[in-house]
Image (cartoon, rainbow, N blue to C red):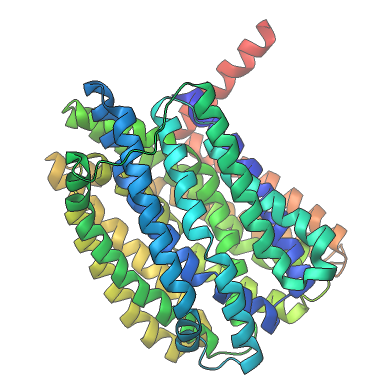
Length: 512
């Protein structure tokens, strides 16, 4: 399992690198202007629905497919599931195409007419993602069920690579339309690559579709509460974007850049291994081994805390130089850097909550307990809307990332209690004790990083990006070294495991 997770993390890392480069190009060409706001707003409707479909697929496909694999009907299930899903994707995409102007008008009340027209056009192009992204998810899930993880983990790499190509070579003629065109082309090429691998693995597919297939009814029952909760989330996202659109020009763009930056460690260290972990969770659940499922869940949560907390500290201390180095050029001004770095600070606070919820959600998926997950999700969304309306009124656009962090943390704590009850254990106290240990080491690390940054600032010109990069590199190296040292002093188990694993890998390489 360690090897599979390592491969998916490497593939995810490649996607993060390409994604970051794509974001740098977008920021360089469009900054936090009205065109960038229009593009990021146009993503909302396609992403909402494609995320709904992908969330549903990830929640039910692998457990159901593995059950049918044991019974000998996996190919029929896959064909029926895929064909029925495609019909739904196409139908909803067609409806949204006609309603796009109305929906954009609701969200972008403070946009100019030119910005609304642009956002509508971009939305209609991006609606193709409602078909392509969920389809690639179905194909990826089937490959994951057969222990093929590397190619499915490269999905974002394909998307971002083609976005980069489109921006570098076609931006002059297509302007901001080069981004969605590159996005869609990348996903189509990814689907072609997945289909080729499925064919190579001799995993069949047919155009047949048995709408009376018992699995479809079971899946519909399982998904009903999840879809209902996700529908409530639509309201949440609409309100969030509407509030952001009411602030100064560039607020939507600044929040988007900040959220993407904060999500890099989550995508790399957590979601990168989720395809492997989901299969493992499903195997424990299918075998009725709740003790094994409990142990691997809390062990995973402790490792997430060990890696994420120092990253949160690093982002909080170095947020401004990171944004300045990565984005401040072209249309991305110093003011853009200031507002984006402020959003990074408040988004980063909720990163542990978001990462932990991502893992625990997979446990509920594996146990097919989507009802509990959906009720909790609805409660969190309602709380999120109430807090967002209140905090954005009190603190401006910063109220949006602050709300995100508060609700992510609350959701993590509630899910921990629910899992403890489900597992009939008190492991949550052990986990929180680990978090306190990781947090204490991270605070000391943060102080060291801040002192180093201040000291080097007295001897270097921080208006020069090279000086900033040197300071960032020195601070990161000494800061993380201090974190590992403190973890060893505090006798943190996760640090001991990582050191032993690295030593084992080093010893094997030497023998080779």
